[in-house]
Every structure is written in C-alpha cells, then in structure tokens.
Image 1 (tube, rainbow, N blue to C red):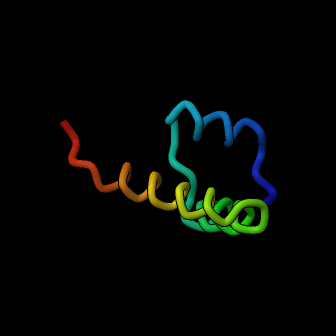
Image 2: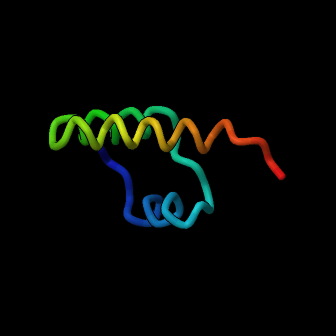
Length: 54
C-alpha cells in the first residue's frame, strides 16, 4: 500500500484521516484476508465520517 508507519499512527490516533485511495486500499487488503472485516471496516469508517460534530 506504500503507507508509512507514521501515517498509520496518525490515522489510529485520529490526527489525520486517511486519503480516499488509502481507505479503499485498506478495504481491498482486508477483503483478501477476511471479507467480513472489510465490510465492518467500511461500515465503521463511513458511520464515523457522517456523525454530526458536537
């Protein structure tokens, strides 16, 4: 995926959001390993991204 560890760290700690192409790459990689995990990742990511801000 050519994503640095520092970028992944930033994603995990919500410093920055991954770019759209990275989200799709994660989903595709998960799908190869565990299709259910790919579906869950997509669901969790999109639900979080549409939550209204407080």
